[in-house]
Image (cartoon, one colour):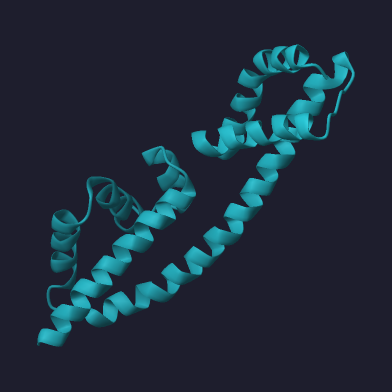
Length: 166
């Protein structure tokens, strides 16, 4: 495939491929990476599908690559979810019963970033699922897990130190 032919295919199909990846992944950076990998494979393996089949080939490549990315994210998210499940019972142990919720919310409001606060509130006060929080905030589920994991670690450290002082 000539350089000119590749550039023409790239210009013509990139927007639709990116939209498809973005629809599946909900993440701009991952979507760009997926589309780039599909084009890289096209170049590297010097694949030259027939003109009338190129769009189908490219879109199938994007869809399959998105599945790979989601599969990888799912495994990472499962590990993070298990970690969070392990962390939550520990939080209750470190916070005395008398004013537990009030002190926890004070910590959340004063020590966490605005995005982490919003995510924490939606997940634990509104009892939204990770998917619902991700959609409400406009970020990926991985970002939700990362913020919650970091927030819970900070809460655990703070209340562990506070308990040790008593």
